Length: 308
Image (tube, rainbow, N blue to C red; front, side):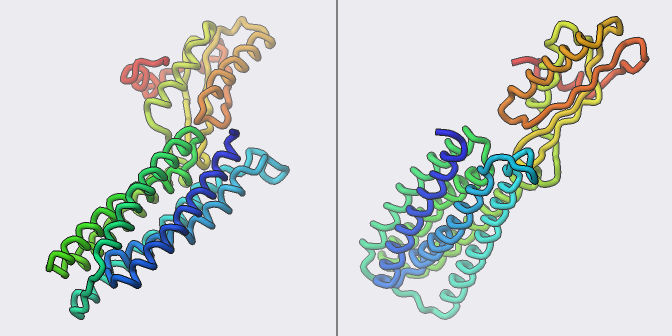
C-alpha cells in the first residue's frame, strides 16, 4: 500500500472507531449518569469531529505534486496536527469545568455500574489497537498527523482507565471519585495536546533534525572516496521532511564532468534517507581556498560515530 492510501485508510478507521465509541459511551452516560463516562463520551465525540478534519487533511497532504506545490503537499500535515491539539485543549477544558462544577454542586449519581465498566474496558481495548496501528503507520510513512492521532489514542487508554477507577469507586459508595476521575481525564486530555504541539512546532519553524540524523548526513557525504571534507552543513525541517545543503571539498584537478558526478553521487546518497526531501551540494575545489573546518560536523561524527 502506498503512502497516500495508507494514511487515508488510517483516517477512515479512526473516524469509524471514534463514532462507534461515542455512541456507546453516550448511551451508557444517559443510562448511568456517570460523569466519568460522560467525559469519555464527549472526548470520543470530539475525536470523531477532528477525525473528519484529519481525514480531509490526510487527503490533501497525499495529493501528488502540482504546478503550485512542486514538492507535494506534505507540509500541510503539521497544521492538521495543530488543529487536533486545539480540539483536544477545548475538550480538556470542558471536561475539567464539568468535573469541578459537579463536585461543587454535589450532584453525583451513578447507577448500572456494570454497563459503565463494560464500555470503558472496551474503550481501552479499542484505543490500544488504534494506538498501535496509528503509531506503526505514522512511523513507517513519517506522518506527524498520524503520529498525533496515535498519541491521542494512547492517552485515551489512560483516561479510560481513570474513568474506570471513578466508576468502580462511585459504585462502591464513594461517589466523589467519579468527578475526580473526570478531572484526571481532563488533565490527560490537555497533556496530549501539549505533546502534539511540542512535536509539531519544529516542523513549522524549520528546526534542525535530531543530531544522529545530521551525523548520518555528514557521514554519507564523506563516504564518497573523492570527498576530502564537508562544511556549512545545514539540515532543517520543511514541514515533516528535511532539506539539506552542504559544501563538499574536492581536489581542484577534477574535470567538470568528474565534479558533477561527485555532486550527484553525494546528493543521491543523502536523498536515500527516508526523512530527506531534497539535498543541495556545492563543490569547493581546494585551490580556491574555500576549504575550512566545520566544528559542528566534526562533533557530530565524533559523538555518533558516523556512518550506518
